[in-house]
Every structure is written in structure tokens, then in C-alpha cells.
Length: 170
Image (cartoon, rainbow, N blue to C red; front, top):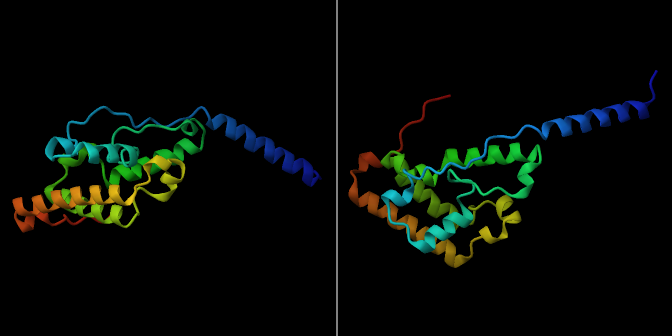
């Protein structure tokens, strides 16, 4: 019968081998240059707001992520890929103008709400990317911009077009 020490040693070696092997498998990077459907192609985005969005939002909510050095370490890269895909699924500024008008309308409302409440950018992101944390003036600037676009859409489209489409059950 093997000793417990030998079993733990074999498990440790096995885990080390797995850790080394997974370093050779990396997800595709989120670095598309396609901005043809970007929010700025349809709506005015002041330079001050654009700078905030790029610094605090675009890594997870666009088609172009600026990757940190630790993205080269697995399983961190997989975790980041999942996080980025989740962020883009919820809101992608680079494809924003392709959304139905009702979705655009509600996303702008959600942007203002989440920024005002300090829920975006998320704390796990700002913990490492301290420059992305928004101060009160930046929150107000982004929220006012989103609310202004929201109101503009409301004034320009019939109310029934501003309703969110029902999602199909999965």
C-alpha cells in the first residue's frame, strides 16, 4: 500500500503537468477593428464621454480589449475570456447601432442607472485597473449623456417601438 505522502506527491506532479500543458491553450483575443456599428456612428459621443468609455468600459463592452500581462497565464485567460464575452453579450458599444431601437433605449437607461449606482465598472475590474474607477463628476457626465440619448430616442420613436422584445426560453 502506497503511503499518503507518495499519493500527494503524485497528485501534485499531476496537477503541475496539467498546469504546464494548459499554458499552450489560449482563447482567441477580442481585438476586432470593426467599429462600423459603433454607438458613435449613430449618436453623438462627446470626447470627454468617449475617453471615459474607452478607459472604463471598452475592455469588456467592445470588440477591442487591451489585455493585461496576466492574460498570458492559464486559467486566468479563460476566466477573462468568459468575463469579456459576458460583458459583450450584455452591451457592446461597437455593435450598439445594430441593436433594435427598443434595446438601445433600455441599454442607455441601464448605463445611466449602473454608473450612477457605482455598479459599473465592476469592482473586480477597478481593483486592478484603478484608472477605470469613476469619480462623481465622471459618473454624472456619463449618466447625463446616456439619459440625454435616452430622452432623444423617446422623443423620436413611437412608444411601442421602445419596448423590449420578449426573449425566447432557452
